[in-house]
Length: 305
Image 1 (cartoon, one colour):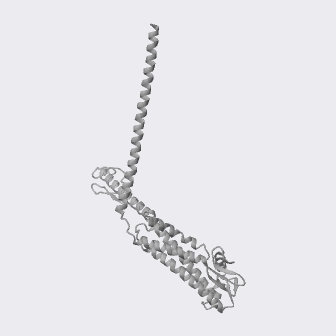
Image 2 (cartoon, one colour):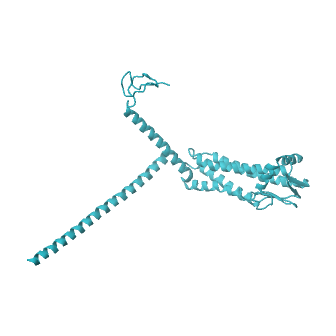
Image 3 (cartoon, rainbow, N blue to C red):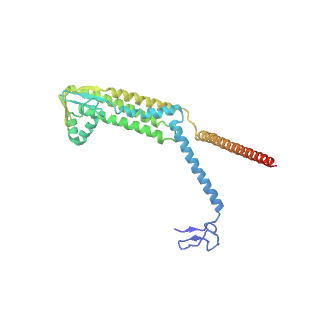
């Protein structure tokens, strides 16, 4: 695609290899270089300002206030709640739980996942046999809402890192509310599943049979719920709290930079004064040595006479 001479507008083609325009004779690479240099400087300044603005907003979003520091901590802690036992179904033959590591049951959540993906057809067949209203169906649905709760809280956490342009965004609080709601629905479904077990002699979780089921929501759920509620409350407080503008953050950054530069300049002045003092001291010592040497030399000359 042809370009044009920046001076006269003559079309340039790929075979125009000379630096000078064949029509007006101007040097194309050097044409109006001062203006282009100013434009490059202006563009570079804009990019730096954009970088500083992002850095200011990112830092402010995470640790800009005490409330935001608490938020980043409480937004991470709910992840611990999902490592704890949420529910346990006990029976004469064994136990199954929404328990990642099997703290309170024989078949952990990991085992349940493995069994489901290996025998998904059996699970759906058993749920159909229950008319999708029995213990297996409610428990698996409770597992789905537990996973949704985890996904919502993870999204809320990462939104703190990526939604820095709008520090007062309510989206994180919405994600937290959805996470809390999903957790509550999960616990309700577990309770419905346990209640439905009274009408069933046995329930097959894939290859895991359960007889005379009892159990319900475990202590880990309440810990997780408390952490989720705390994260929700703190995000709502942050969303309602007044936030600083980009101009205020940039002004504070410049103030911090000025203070830092002044400290460095002060240290440099102190180093310079110390250097001058050392030079004076060294010169004085040298002068004293010379004086003593002259005195000794004078004494020797006197003795010779």
